[in-house]
Length: 434
View 1 (tube, rainbow, N blue to C red):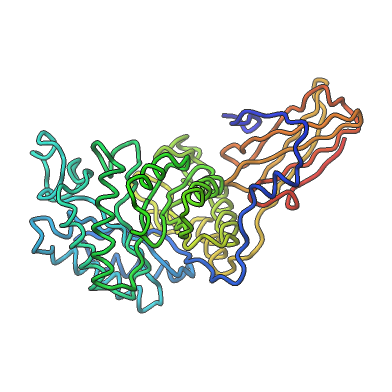
View 2 (view 1 turned 90 degrees about the horizontal axis):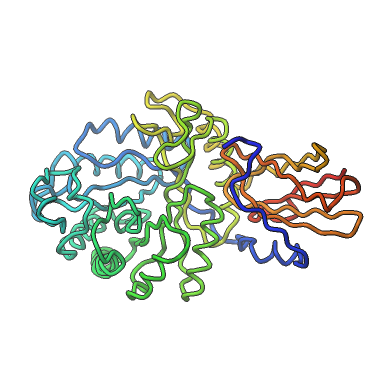
């Protein structure tokens, strides 16, 4: 879609207080709370060369990260049964945790991927199950107690080095790559209710995060509440790529409406710098390397001001052969995002981009055009000398730009316009008159 177009329906409103609107949507300020954990997603734990762990932690330290997140595929760690561990995978995990501890970096372990011997996949899928990386690994375990025993082992072995253990990945993801099969809410709740007490028995100090949600409309989270998950986690993980800030705010409202005030762990989010070679990658709109850098810096600094965010973990450290979400290339060359993220981690309360606005006349109508910080819904308010007031809600295009034609009823002269991002608030907006 062209930069001059807008992705959302414009809504005209005539009697709403702009101050009340901004107050309703503004995040709660962080007052005296510690800065959230700030970090990146690194390579998955697999039976591969230990030098990969060394390189990832060294690079994370250069970013000023205080946390890294890594996926631990249970299917790779215990491929043959519940009593044996793959020695190379375990050695890699040991090395990653030791390197992180030496650099004073904590680790979030995302634990998923059911091994063939405990996958609940249907027989036609299970019959072709290899030791790892097959469709069968994307089904929940048929015996959740075996998973609980495995995460308890991790809690006992690594203890204070851990920032958290994350229970599975994206159970509400529609592509069914991670938690396939029916009755997802019931089965995820069952897994969580066994894993949480097992971890706490092994090491009461280990933080357990649940959810790993991709949906911000609250439907799946409400289903989890109905299954009785409250009391079985210390925080909720969310993975939001599109409209990150709006999604965080949305799911927080659902939490509070259900009596849940646990912090949110935004431990997977980012933008892919695949423009102009591609338009869409991994279901996300491609952007330029410069836009990726600006978006990451702005969202990191916007979120740090909110009291209910426990962690902000960028996806990801390095590009892989199929995706360009990394802050460095596949060959290890720093992209513009590397410097932007390092700056945000080192100075988390630094400046965030502000909305920009210009007005011009074209074909007898006023156009409002400009740019804004990524991640949230934008608001526009126009007042005319003839007494009319117009308001619109919209989102930016992939390059953080917008162009709106104002109603002709406002006239062509003596029109004042103000534009702002909901998260930042009206005071951080831009004004112009014509």
